[in-house]
Amino acid sequence: MTGASGGIGRATAIAFGRRGAHVALIARGEKGLEAAAQEVRAAGGQALCVQVDVADAEQVEQAVARIEHELGPVDVWVNVAFTSVFSRFEGITAKEFARVTEVSYLGYVYATKAVLPRMKERGRGVIVQVGSALAYRGIPLQTAYCGAKHAIQGFHESLRCELLHDKSPVKVTMVQMPAVNTPQFSWVLSRLPRRPQPVPPIYQPEVAARMVVHAADHPERREYWVGGSTVGTLAANAVAPGLLDRYLARTGVSSQQTDETQPPDAPANLWEPADASKDFGTHGRFDSRSTGRSVQTWASRHHGLLGASVAAAAAAAGASSALVRRR
Image (cartoon, rainbow, N blue to C red; front, side, top):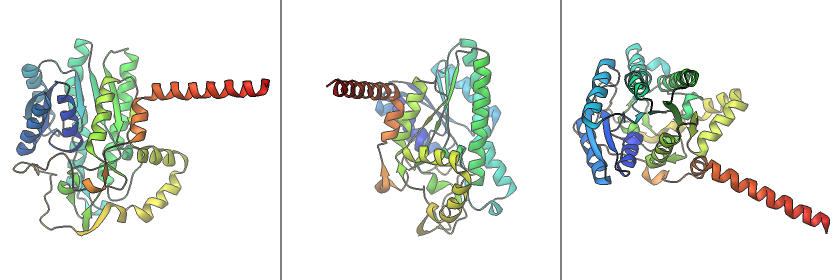
């Protein structure tokens, strides 16, 4: 699990821990990793902390080798790690843009490249790429992040096609996320005048984690969507992208900022981990505004049951209609 020290990565690691899994936790921050490992163990799993910068391909390769040596063959690999810069495009330096891309996109590539050959050799394994609605729909103030998520989407589709062509038993799937209450809004580098926030509706990390675990268990689907807002965003972008451009131009800047002034000494994890000496936890600052449930996510996980129920209801309605006509 990359990005395991907070947010979706940490919530997912704990969810796997509840199943008694051996979980390798990959991140940079020592305190965040240690606290996440304690929670995995408390949930019933085993945990191995591996401090790695996923932007370094050699570090990632060595991490996978160590994980397989200490925990055994990797059955499921989940890519979550990312960083970003909240800013207008002109306010992001070239080096910062490159850094976001190296962590948030190439980190997925490097990890997949390290673990995939091992899975193919064994003839089994699942790789879950954690994406975002922003893999399809760019928004203002997040050019670096949106660019990385779009890149992951293209990478995922291409790799999936290759594996299907080879009839490989190794599976890859992607989970597209909505706005989630994670610590990123406290530790991502921000040049906004006010404190950043997720655009409501906001979901708790556990909602996302449940879908990641489900995707790992059912990787035949090419991707999963989490939250009604993700479905609505992707549908609107498919039908009327130009109209959505104008809507986001009007609302996207203010909706991503609270009324609070951004502190000048706010932590930033772009170059160094913000949780090296302090644990930020799984959740962000928006618990009071976040929901731990999603009807859409339940429906997505149970689409077979839902489809059967709809079919049964339609059949019953048809039979009732026929009976009425006969009478």
